[in-house]
Image (tube, rainbow, N blue to C red; front, side, top):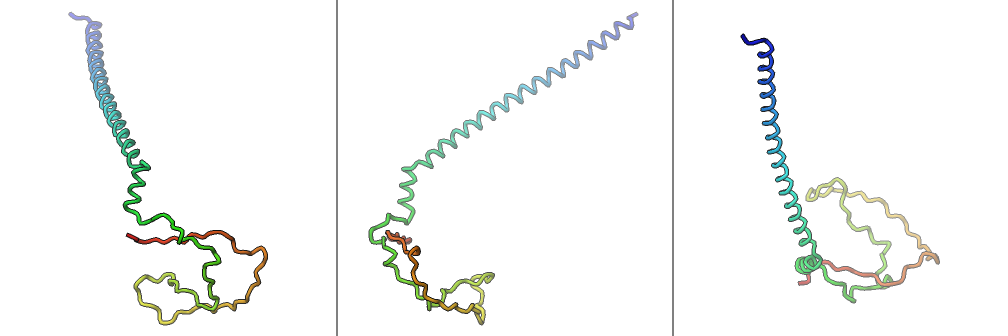
Length: 148
């Protein structure tokens, strides 16, 4: 008859071989997962390189300059657009303020019957102080719009 110790050793060796098989299988699965992740990392790095190259092409200053000249309506400032502050017309203090939209009113809604305006303050002429002088130098008047 087989001794009890032999049966225990056979059971222990069967358990050890089962555990070894399971561990080997898990290690192979982990290696497959690692290689899949490495391939995904390489693919992402290649995609990042492609995006960096595309970004460099899109931000090329010569290309941007050509596109801005082609699609924007802005042009260089001409000498006729430069004026001094003395050449600008003075504001008439008796003229009412320009129309400003009423806060909270939606565009296109019916105009109110009565618009209450604050009383105009009486303007007293202020003598020009020596420190409040207008700056000298050119003022650039910008014209925006299609000139094509």
